[in-house]
Image (cartoon, rainbow, N blue to C red):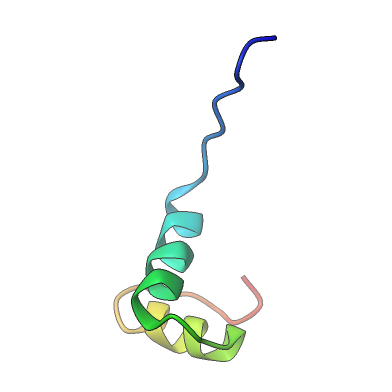
Length: 44
């Protein structure tokens, strides 16, 4: 059985990098961090 390569979006990478950096972080804290450098809504 062949291995499937999974690709994630840049937005997903942004979230993962924040989680890896902060270790323990809420969804709201992730939004606040992303809003420091991108114009996003908490509904995104």
